[in-house]
Length: 494
View (tube, rainbow, N blue to C red):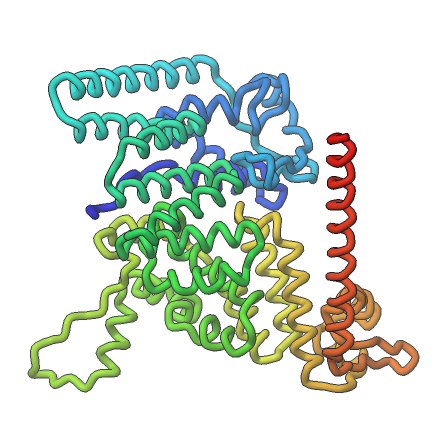
């Protein structure tokens, strides 16, 4: 089906920089570095619509309403509230609730905006001229090429509505299945860029249908990473984990995220969603994950990205005579045809908290686990635009998993012993366990008089009875609503 198309734009790394500026969890130095990266990106790619969207004095997402550059330079940006949700899309996945003291705004320059806008208009005029000439003198292929350039231009400069409209128009006139898949993947990235979860869901389903109708191997693997990331953003970790973990060995979607980021997403999703046996085999002992987080040497990690680790393991497993012809080394698909880009794109990440979290959880070293979980929240969950809004839920779920894992081993355990295992006080542990027990997430009871936690054997009959009652109530409610509609229609007929 040919090489994948439309992979360069939009730059999702730029959206992460926008998030960093708005996030209350980012340091001032990180905010300043992100501001510089955004300004450089806007100037390099002539992103007039995105510049207006972010920095305009009246409507800019990163500046106060009605505040000019001179005013913003003398006072801090306002305290912002989160507006991004499943129904309200925004490039900023969080508009933090904390005071933005020491924050960094994006200055507005009317002259710069007019220059960028003029450059966009000139480029669009050149593309229109190319399309007109192709219509008169060339064929459909040249016309589609010009239209593709227009769609990519809109995606490059950050004009969401125009880019989506251009890609949809391009898709209507495209008959090649591979090109259609590439167009939908480009629309998904635009939706990711602006945090439009509804559009992501719709486009992922559309792309899945196209791939099932005959998509090639590479595009199937790309879609798997897109699906996994989408499910992660809507808190469907149990569905996201298998897709993200499977993508580790076949990852080629560098336009979506870096390989290091994919490893982080896969570890987090697998840790909270997989049962203990699968967690051991697919996360703790996963060769791809161990190659990245199991080494403190940056050279070893780079070797993992380039496929050298796979090659080394292949050679040690095979009994090869030194005089024989050398066997070809195993190839890491993350760098296939794109090794130079991969080396530049990989960020420097300290995976130590993640490694400590998964290893201590599986080994039952809960005091180390709690400390590592706090570091994971600080270093990963609070710093990533896809993970930030789920950080409290994730930490809560991981604590519940640790409690459940310990309590399964005992019928009765003292609160004092359990609190020492987790490195917390008895009162804090009592308060933290209570909501999980009340919601029946943990099948146990707390006896403060005796100072113990007693695990109860799950009663399937009681659970079945409660399910029947709950479902019966729902059925009765639906029947009552149906009856009201029927009576209303009957009165209208008379």
